[in-house]
Length: 134
Image (cartoon, rainbow, N blue to C red):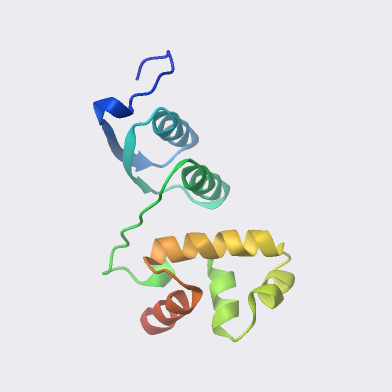
């Protein structure tokens, strides 16, 4: 992509690739901010994954297409799994956030990521998918 920022959306370009490292995330966010479409898989984990998803959600619509052959346990990372497990045990979001030492906002953000990764619209659907395929 050219260094000079301008709106590239009229060209209808789409970048396709995998985000596995910070440089990949930076390039993807730069492309998206210039109006280029993205079709990416996010293999990065932990904080980089969360920051990248936050940036993508902030800049545009995120559509996830989960691999239905994979179990939900293999899709979620080590920060998302304890939250969905707490909800599956019957805790409310507030209770789970408190027990996991999270703010309610962070818990809700992680739940949004979980719903996206599982390809569902609600927490109830996420719990049903989590419980049925673990």
